[in-house]
Length: 243
Ligand SMILES: [Zn+2]
Image (cartoon, rainbow, N blue to C red; front, side, top):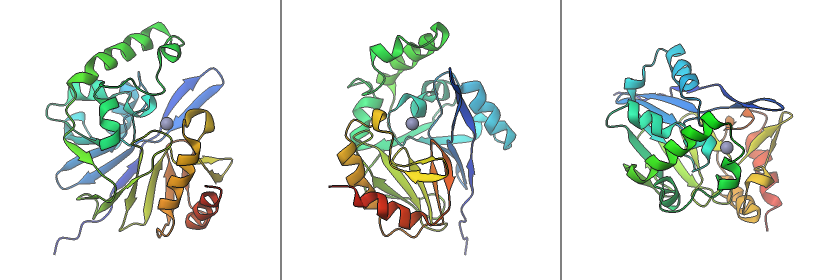
């Protein structure tokens, strides 16, 4: 019997900000049919993403699909560049996020106001990405409870609030939760999503209840990184503050 084990690599990228570098953690999965990336990094980070992959011995051409946890620009930032570079690249995203990713609805947080703050070269790349969105084909539309045939089974958990179609991914075999932006690690503590970036905070807290009962060794937050100190207990506690 062929037993599929988890083969997951956390990539380390960072967003330069006036107050210092802000690290983010996309993920690379190796499966028999190729490489899957979960999220793509911040806009303008394509070279950084490419070299992070190269350090793992992976070429862009090896990437078979992208799973997007949600529409925010620090997650879809290099999607256009990846689609340009990789023929046949698949894009998977939750149904409620698809209209934004395809440019049918404006990205909720990447407003004109926010774009105006970007340095000119990054703004040019942002405009390039926005112009590409309507051409994007979503290869697989994800729903809550889907079991993805990767890494021995990855469960899709719809966790709206941070955005309408935000998802977490639960890796059954390794009891690993990719929380994306549903949770953060701040000063070594597991905390809820960032209030300024979470338009529906009550919904985001209710979503944490969907994570209760998962057996967890480790949680990965896109902002803050890995967390291993009794994550299930901490998530249950955070979810208590939901209405
Ligand atoms: Zn984010």
